Amino acid sequence: MRVVDLELALRSPGTGSSAEARLAHPGSQAEAVLLSEAPVVLDASALLRHVLDATAYGRALTAQLFADQGLRAAWARARAQADGANLPLRLRLRLTAATGDLHSLRWETLRDPLTDVPLACDERLRLVRYLASADTRPITLGPKPALRALLVVANLRDLSTYGLAEIDVDGEVGRVRKALGGIPLTVVGDHEDAVSRRATLGAIQAALRAGPAILCLICHGQHADDETTLWLEDDAGNTARVAGRVFGELIAQLARPPLLAVLIACEGGGVSHHSGALAALGPRLAQAGVGAVLAMQAKLSLAAARALLPALFAALATDGAIDRAASVARAALRDGGEWWVPALWLRTRDGRLWEDALTAAGSGGIHAGSIGTLQVVTINGGNVGSIIGSQHTYGAPPSPGPASTGGGRAEAVATQRRRPAQHRDTLAHYLEQLAITGSAHARPEVTAGLREARSGIARAKQALAALGASAEDMPDDTP
Image 1 (spheres, rainbow, N blue to C red):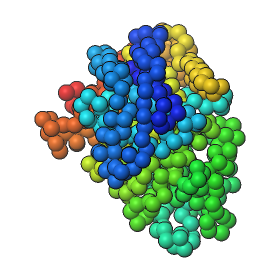
Image 2: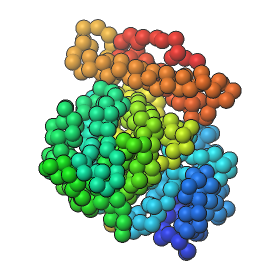
Image 3: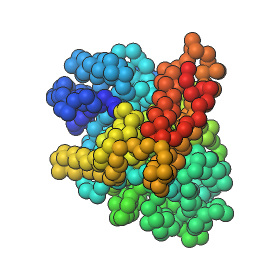
Image 4: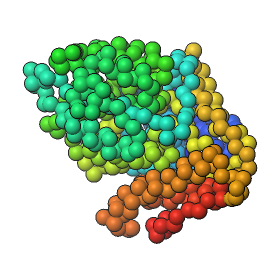
């Protein structure tokens, strides 16, 4: 996936901290070090004064981060390169475990220091928190059809004892199942389709051993004294408090940790008072080996939760890019003001959760030879993370006729024919938004979403043509 990468590595919060800025362009094999010791002073106490106002908080955090003119110039240069190449810009905030205080800041409220536009809702900009990990197991990027998901909903019988509302298990299962589309879903929780009716730690561990690529965890939690506590269930359905450290160890001990974990604390009454605890768990799970973690860092209303997951998984289904999908999901929450709540921690270098084996990154064409093998090793103070993509070998695109009717070609054609439908779902969503606002008042993420959805449809048609197969044309495929 072709993007321009601007990485800001932040070292030791507070007075005396500094940032390093690196710029990577897909047209170059070398990174450019724009700044190595830019001074940054992050005043958490000053930010707390704006904790109830995401706009004011974002402006204060932006002013602190980009106070140095060199960093502002680095940002301007990165945006200019991305715009000039008509490519998205990924802002990668490298936050290490040693700088835990940095994780508590609401980075998703950041605004463009040049235009004052919120960054998290811009589909042309992917805002991620990047973490290296000591876990040396490979993150294998497989094809989307192999994906399976696990949903855990802990609705404790004794919630009223603690003044907490019950979680709507049936509603959560229905919303997640609908949002996932055709991805098979396993449920742990008090639901008729569940493999276990109790969300105990043992039941979760057993379900995770089956190797689901996506984990959705909906529960209550608390965070105090640098430790997160999850409120799971015991065998009787009552509260069983599980330390985040223990849950992280469970993930780390799996043969295949999930590629994506989505952590939501959502009460049936409308909001969660403990959702920030799951955000605190995000870095721990990423360090335990999960490829990407999307966690809520503040209260999330039920209405926002209903909008978030369908937007997230619909966008993710088009290309497997979780950073882009997170931007789309945040944009879906913009009218309600909760767009900054989802925080994304990322281990994969290019933001993808699965490999598009037939479509070359960037061009969309089918290339002869062996493609899809990628290994990136990041070493930072002894931390090593690796990503190894699935290996697939394809010869020249087959010509139509008896010689090209084998199972491999049939599977390739079937895969490419599914992609236009996925892109058209995203296209329909943005066309609906466009109809509401009109072209003159369309938000940037709507315009960018329309362009990328149509580009995806065009790529799939190109791939089908190379395979000697027909492609259906729909009226909205082109402007």
